[in-house]
Amino acid sequence: MSLLEAPVRVRTAHAVVAASGLTRQYGEGDTTVHALRNVSIEIEEARLTAIMGPSGSGKSTLMHILAGLDAPTEGSVTIDGVEITGMNDKQLTRLRREHIGFVFQFFNLLPMLTAEENILLPLSIAGEKPEREWVEELLETVGIADRSTHRPSQLSGGQQQRVSIARALISKPSVLFADEPTGNLDSTTSKDVLALLRHSVEELGQTTVMVTHDASAAALADRILFLADGQIVKEVRGSTAAEVLAAMQEVSGR
Image (tube, rainbow, N blue to C red; front, side, top):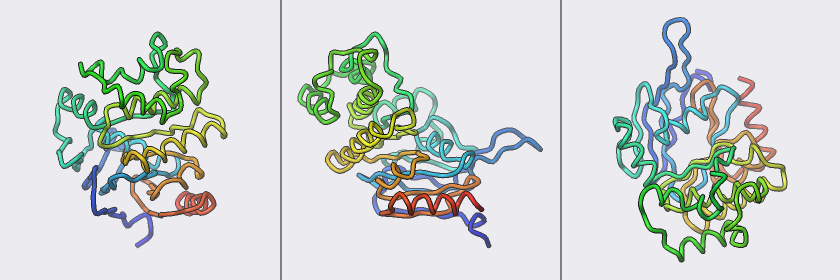
């Protein structure tokens, strides 16, 4: 049996997110696309997990299903022990609001709001009052305390991404999902943003899942899962950027 024929089942001791037998198909008949094939995975608490793979490997599909943004064709997902696969839209919206934070490649900030107002938006939508001490700590942690009253147009790309990270953290989510968080940034700014994500894991205990194509970004993770043809085919821990690149070449070449 080849590497790509044998799915890797990834288990951990303390899982915040767990998925079993995930399959995702698009279309029917001859046009069917198998985005995921029997993927089982557990995401460790207070760790940074990176997901990598060649284009079309299923990494974004996997993240979207784990985050409740898409539904699997088969299989199940739990977050904090709660089964989410059969939830309706209202239940999923509440789940995402209470348990999940998102950071995307594009910052998705509202231009008419200040940095702090953008950060507080999830709480405002939920009708919740922010803890002032936590807000101030978060502003300091992400390094924008002196820019909190500025609107997005007055901020650099890196500062805007810091705002989006703070917005994702404001509700103290069970898990933070980051989809190519440095894809729209220069290399220097990318390092700062990645350091911030690493800091949130180490100092705040924030469970984080990051989809990335950047070997240097993945090298900061506690572990890296590699997908190919809709399956997890390799897992590595404590890797350098060079080792990540070598693993990607191995996965992409099969």
